[in-house]
Structure formats: structure tokens, C-alpha cells
Length: 182
Image 1 (cartoon, one colour):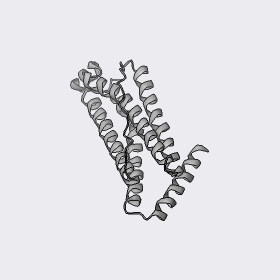
Image 2 (tube, rainbow, N blue to C red; image 1 turned 135 degrees about the horizontal axis):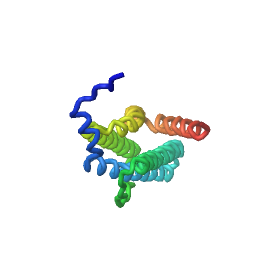
Image 3 (cartoon, one colour; image 1 turned 135 degrees about the vertical axis):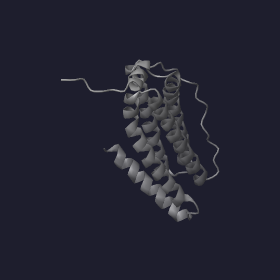
Image 4 (cartoon, rainbow, N blue to C red; image 1 turned 90 degrees about the horizontal axis):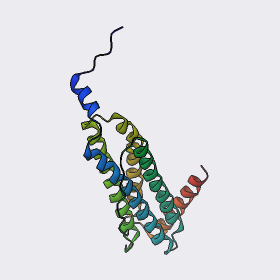
């Protein structure tokens, strides 16, 4: 039986290990996820202080999810023996003037997170770290879903009547409650 043919360039790339760029991006992403968690929590507080308990609950659930992502990435980095240096977290924004502004901030946050994850995948590809790319696959799918969901909510919030806004608040509260039971 002859061994499988592996191009010499690929072997050299695989033996090089993770690049400094990849290691830095993964390390930074742990802090990015924790910052996202804080941003969602701040949005939850903003909505809660305006008696929009459904949106507040939905944001709080998302805050927990983002923190969980940070922990997953940290765990992957530790198992892979990648160094992680947590960065100081700036206080999240809390001075919104309208629900629309909150949702715009959250959509921008998700879009930025998508770009960060794509940058990690590209860096992993350049240095042959295919395990990193495989690890990131579920995150990419989740980002597509998150941007779609938040973008859809923002579209509904824009120009919504007060009654429609309260109905949306109610729907998101039901959704958050259902998530807790899964």
C-alpha cells in the first residue's frame, strides 16, 4: 500500500503551525465575544428600564449566548495550546435615544463579529490550520442567522407604530421564554 500523496507545499504549511496573526486574532476574539455579551446586557438594561421586558429578556438571552461563545473559543484555544490574553473591556454603549438605535447598534455588532470570524478563518487557511476552520464553521452559520434575525427585527422596529413596537416586544419575550425551556 502506497502512502497518500500530499503536495510538499501543503506539508510545509501544516508543519509551520499557527501564525502569530492567527494566534492574536483568536485571543482577541475571546474578548470580542465578552464585549458583545456586555453590549447585549446593556441593551437589555435599556429596554427593561423602559418596561419593554420582552426585548430586555431577548437581549439578556443573547448576552448569555455571546459569553458562551467566548468560553467556547477560550476552551478551544486552551486545548490547542494557543495563548490567550484577555483585553480590557470598555463600557458598552447605553445612551440610545430609541429602540431603533439599540437594534442598529446590535446589528453593527453582529456584522463586526462576522467579519472578525471570517478574518480568523482566512488566517487559519493561510497557515494550514484546518482544525481552526472546522471549529469556526458552526459560528459562521450562527452569524448568518444572527444577522438575519436582528436585521429582520430592525426592519420591523423602523417606523413601527407604538402598538406594533409593543407587539414585537411581546413576541420577543415569548421567544426568549421558549429558549429558556430548551
